[in-house]
Length: 304
Image (cartoon, rainbow, N blue to C red):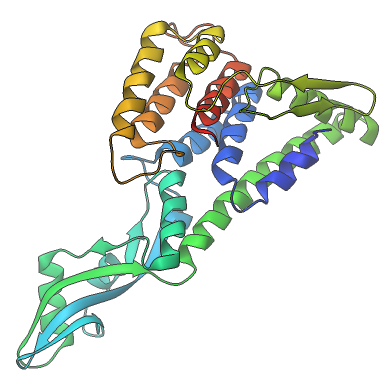
């Protein structure tokens, strides 16, 4: 049995944030909450030129290769005491506009070293050498890496906002009637959101209350594009768009710097474009269920 309370529990899962954001996008779309939908879309696809929330300002520690009095000191944490406040802010802060998938990748890579490295501009290296070091000094190159825990805090802030959104739905439902009515309504909401979901090999999801359950069977096989194409066309996606996805999959697979069980950048861009088409003339048939099917079908294709 799946209820809104189960969704809240899923959002607490530290490894399921991207899936939770997709669910939140579907919920926001269904409830016509444009502000929430815009925020979730930006978290999923990146902020681009838009101004990100304050929690996406990451504090950095600055390191560099220093040559001082003829001796070279590689990978040394730099002194910043003589910098102006403006320059100090620039070199010790990274505004992360990247998508949540990139943020998650930083966290994974952080286990074996810096997951995010921001290279400082030459003029900032020169200013640090001049203002913070005495005598003859040259900073060959410098970079900033996140302060310990800052990326994890960013992810925690995103999860917290998602939890507040889902809890707000429950509060709105409770205001409309009794607690029993709220539970029935929450069941209907999640059942409606998950209707038509596509799952991977050997997977079964049961949705409903104690008396009635609905079984969702597998329709997309891992790495079988024919089954993926059929599922996408069934929810109204044009053949030309499916062909674009196939090209994106093939080009991403040719990259040597990524695994074969995760979305590549071109596939993620295709998903972003299709989310933008939902409800427009290009994808008039799209519904909340169609958006859910699109994402879960692609995940099933990748075996995730």
